Image 1 (cartoon, rainbow, N blue to C red):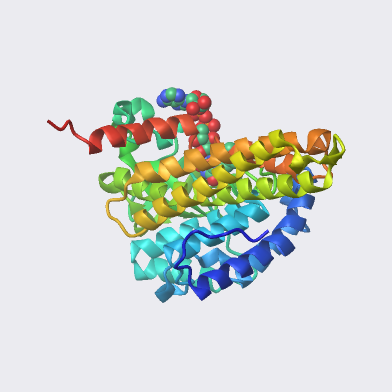
Image 2: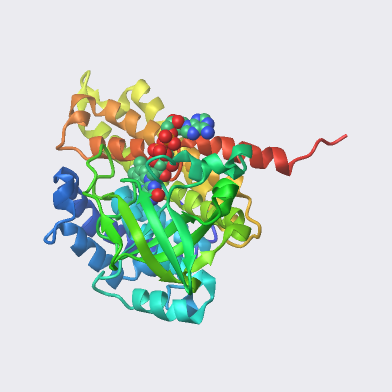
Length: 414
Ligand SMILES: Cc1cc2nc3c(=O)[nH]c(=O)nc-3n(C[C@H](O)[C@H](O)[C@H](O)COP(=O)(O)OP(=O)(O)OC[C@H]3O[C@@H](n4cnc5c(N)ncnc54)[C@H](O)[C@@H]3O)c2cc1C
């Protein structure tokens, strides 16, 4: 269904990008996602899995490099164009949309570093990759530190008890990394590189962290099995184990002195794009419900002619539109503003993911018993949306982080 875009200045290029992304979502992501969703988690990452064909097609179309600057071989998209694409891919399958996004994390970080050697090593091969041979991941969460990684500005954050258990120590001209990242690392099972968050100075807790690019095909790195979970099943997860893995000095992109600011910047981008992605999930659920309500006859007329159903459809529509406005505004503002207003991106993530669950739940209800059936996409959208309330920081812990930002930003006025 073609939605009405309230941005009246949408360019022809933006309309074309939306059309192309929607085709990719409908023709490639949706069918592959159905297969992957029903496969056992360990098979999703096996050699002949459709996951790799999806990634190859995405890389060939350049969706893997949307976050890389144009001068380094990326797509040169405007912030609004990125939101449009995120929404469409999220409409297709949030798990696969996020897989394509997370695959670029190490390359994006290397691009941001401005270091020509890192750009040669990690950005150029990635943007030129048409076979999805280079797959990135983000290694933050640990068995004993989950929410701790996103508790921005919490007073306890800079105390030693909050320090991650994955540690880096200097050995001559190399960093030596040891410890375990949890089974929640998306694409951890298949990734070739990780953007890894590591304690460098444990006395400073989370604020003593560094951010490293770690090639995963090296001695000292091993991986856990694929995690079996409720939603977003096409996006697989697995542990990373570091046992004296070594990287050169310049692979620490950010040290403790800049770490807190860096995490603010990452969340400002990632949370707003999560908002755009789950706008797509909410829209998909709304569209399914609207279409179904026109064909299902109860009480002698189509469901959509019953007022209770109409009220639900309107609420769903309203939430989808609010999601798009907030996530787009937050991302477009923060993509060009330093320091970013992180609380707006967090608001986008929290609002849109919750809305996607609410809309998917209403859509499932409108489907009646059929909504629970695997023959309809709605039960998958519901499960996918549920996972998003925990992913990239739980909505509760993110809300607390945003509240601290608000309190700090606005003083008492007389
Ligand atoms: C689909 C999915 C994909 C993911 N992908 C990645 C990835 O690519 N890389 C990665 O590193 N991680 C990833 N994660 C992990 C994710 O970031 C964590 O699950 C999340 O940050 C929460 O951590 P936790 O699961 O350990 O929960 P916990 O931190 O143990 O939280 C448990 C409960 O306690 C609450 N809580 C925790 N701390 C506080 C506090 N200080 N105050 C009040 N309440 C609190 C939380 O809100 C939650 O309800 C992913 C998770 C999911 C679900």
